Image (cartoon, rainbow, N blue to C red; front, top):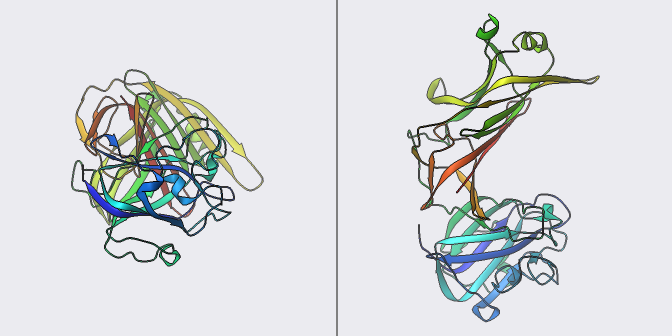
Length: 359
């Protein structure tokens, strides 16, 4: 992992998960697996573009403060600002670290929607010491962007919920050399027809969610917009529901593959005066035997809790199956459960994510 040096750390917080203010319980720094203790005596200046008087900016960085129970004086919070917040901490002496672990905002396990969401983190070699340095998005002298992603919402419950951030430069690319910034992902849902002596049926998708395990039932739910395909779908009760993903640049296919397959289960529809949709659900037990190692890219968050490591990706990884070894940021673990979620708007905008958990 990359070792970062910082006199000042800057968090530009774009938004939260909802609610009327923003909370962040803690930002901890580690080097070689050891927590770097930070007390008020180790902080030269701490400030924010907005904060609540009982949740001062330095409360997010002092490592001795509790991460559970009462949140006043035990974490940072704004005074009703919900977006475009700059949080700054300048240390008495520069620190070196290779990991940042955060606990997102909560109040005795409630109010998790106030937690920080989209964030950029910078290190700087200069000291900040006045309010003019606290303008969201303003350029920072001698700075380096080390994180640009999303903090996971705190779990519901009055417990510590540490999330280890994947810092820029720590993740490694995998598989073919796919220029993700230029490539576009497409998803297709096919209902096989051979089992019912019919042709395969391709249906549109507005969303799907899959959960895959090796040697245990995997589940898939697909929402099909409109009701036009309902009669064709129910004619294939013995078919498989298959989700395929394709990466392409223009007319050139870079990579494609199957990311979910289940037996057809239930077929339901919902109808209103304005629109309708069909929901397909099914399961299938599959045993994956490849056991390959897959380095991950496009990592947006990670966490370790109760012996389980979880990693989130911005887009699904075509190469990864349950039972594979995941390699990311100098860590490795076996993928026990892979959850993929995709939503496609009426104008074609795709929102996607993949969560991998294991030991």
